[in-house]
Image (cartoon, rainbow, N blue to C red; front, side, top):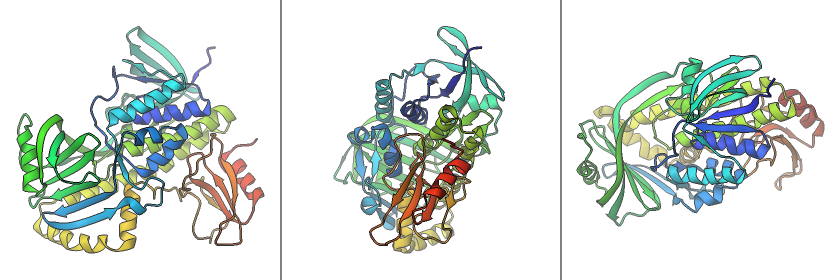
Length: 464
């Protein structure tokens, strides 16, 4: 009998390539295929959040991405001339206190080159046409230039976007709805004196909006209007919105433009036996907050080390259930937050707008509220406190707790790492089991090596 391929990755966008980079680091064999003949050619997803930059350090690509980035340190939201929210990222508790604006084509190029350095080639023009599962793995059919290929894989990762073939063939419902608003974007060169360190959003009185995103070479304009924008889109529609919202900028030329409709959808389960759904294949939502691509990368980081433990270290496959539990909770919270943001931003009801315009300026100047807002945008507050993998050896302790991000730390391998820390401001030690994705698995006051060993054996399932 032919030995099955450990992992087949369908989809070579940022989510799929992140999973591939992690598996390559961990020494797990895989193939990565994509139905498209080439990667992203447009800017597409733009903002790379601080937590994503932290997570990608282990793949040694963060510095390369930053060399291509426009660093945005401020976000400013206003209704006309009335400022609603001003938040400054410069004091974020991270080595990356900004939003890195990087066109998706550049993000993908950096990831692709990193994969090539590992000896990995993305197989393009390959379409998943059938799959069948049994308790030991997945049988798939791949259609490509050479015809039909049948592949046996132990695990299948669906990173193939909003129109996922993996999700379709698994017959998994993509529950949710389409938003009534219609959006348009244009990547442009501007004549403007506006500073390139600030992302500006202007909310119109009719429920529309205009946003201006600085890039290293040019700007992105996103507009939403309750009125038709015209078919086909014209430069004048974007200029009219900039003028109406008081954004002092003249469009010199347009690189590309597109219009689109937003959906809020997610799957109920991100694991179906030996198959997994990641990124846009599992959840899509409003672009408010710049969370989409970053969430897909977070999915991949979460799944990769668990797959490696099962494949390389013989850990029971039940560990993989925690992927859907942990990232499903993140996805639900993300859709709820973006839906709420949409309702606040794109609301034509006079009373709702008046209440929003009165409350937001006050709330955003409360330090705790402002801190939470920017840390949520940066994805620094993502945590897994209710996961079965999160165990507090000292239930009443304050500060770092199980499930929380550990700043600037990820083990080099796919195995959790036990660390005994001695904080400067207290005499007692803290015992930490650091997960390979940079989150605390076990936390206890004192030097408790036995507790860490018990956690690694009984909770993670790693015997050796």
